[in-house]
Image (cartoon, rainbow, N blue to C red):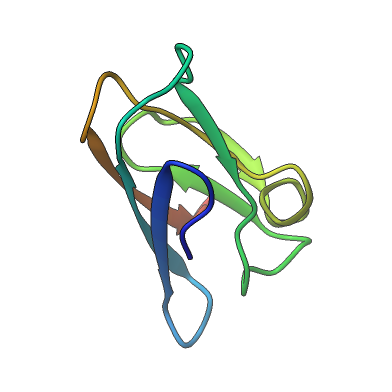
Length: 88
């Protein structure tokens, strides 16, 4: 849902093995560049990997602290693909 100057959509696989997050920035105000998005539908005791950066997160962290997304300039967008770690 739209919150402030950002719109985001989250799609979670039925088995919770992966999630795709789309984030669209609108006009930025006052140098606002980061947004933190709590994710839903992931297993809290599971480790997930951001496919583009290689960063790892627990499902609990993503649900409570959220995924931080950096946007640069007006109308920037990002797509993140986060998958369940196979090393569990």
